[in-house]
Image (tube, rainbow, N blue to C red; front, side, top):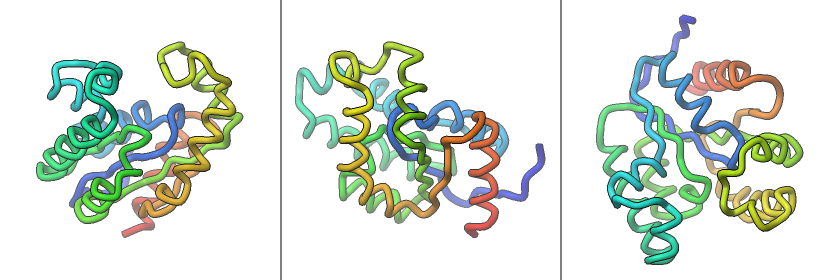
Length: 176
């Protein structure tokens, strides 16, 4: 697949869990021939513990501080495709940093689609003891105004990951 997208800065993918940030991000990075990084994985690598353990042992404020530092380090490097954790763009300092140094892309999907996707695996602690539709709706309500500040908005609900990838590439080509 040849596309007329040349990266001059990092592409930061944001959105709710289940929207495809990591899966689509890996494919986008491959098409653009740049590295892919998942912010949560990079945080875990830097801290030597899981995101859940960081939250449990040190609290959300400490996690967000570490997240800011890791994202800042990643944004200071060469262009990459970066999948953000769902709450990263909520932090005003992190959001400002991303706005200055990256092109942000909000991957959007309706709650029904997200519930279908996150129900396929039991790897999301936030959803284990609650109704996924309620949790996701609440998160969207809290995060939508911040997410709306993203440079590009892409529909990630319909079709396959390949369809979402093509929507992102179309938006990047048109968003320059």
